[in-house]
Image (tube, rainbow, N blue to C red; front, top):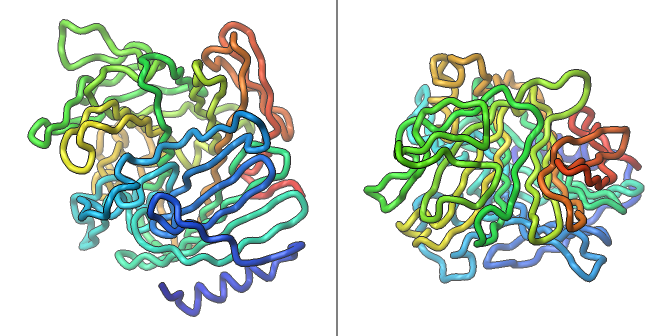
Length: 410
């Protein structure tokens, strides 16, 4: 992949910033995908050169019990095959989506692949750098469907079990849905992962057919339903109790999608989502600015898709922080009368051509045996404390101000 002169100038300017060292990152082939690798004593991150997918990520790598929370799709170590969409080739972990969603319908003459070219096309490695306690890996891409440039910077901080991600979008003028597509590996035992979030305005199940039985896909939740309680989501069948989406996995053999609309917090505190793995002793968490990423999509894939390449074997949870209309793509998200926009929810960002930064945080914190669902999160400068419903508390060093400043401690 070659970069245009304008992007080369932008990259050169970025690399000219003061750093203690800058170098080419290690490139390693992991599950058939060449990947750039960044590491500190606590965390190792691999980012695929195809699509920029972040996995595997090893947290607590300096301990006897490291944690690898992200999903690797089950076909990754199989012989290469023609996939229904480019994003499925490297599908793993967390990846940036622009435009987010299926993009099956053209928009003003534009056509985009599912989750955009950024999720299934080659990225160019710009380099790795270090400034004080922080280490960074930078990649870049220029999509063709709409003129623009995206820089991806993945950063780690010594002593922390946290990944900081910053995407700077230049160009790409016009409306578009955007999001992070974090995909977690799930245990087989039902109800062992507990989901909680910062306050929500409401939730809605994807309208229409999300899992198509004609493709041997099956869903359990009532399409288009609006609700306020994540623990009571209406089912398709009237004789079935509402689903408790705070306890996953659930509904074996089904694949469902819902969207959680964040209530705007008071003050400067960010929005958050947490998944407590009760049988593994840790919480995975993500932190965002809800003014930028207004909602969270939950993609619950519990052996519910039987067509190629899923073949009934995939068990994962997508926790996807987005500004989008479900996973419907650009045309639906830009429409002013889509079901969420009609309810006053922002479903697309308006890229004006100038730089737009999307900052995101993901991390892991260990928990004691009595820790169940995260009830609240307390924020003080440089630190987050997770408080369980039963009162147990665990804390982690997190530079959560990065969400708005894009800056890390030196």
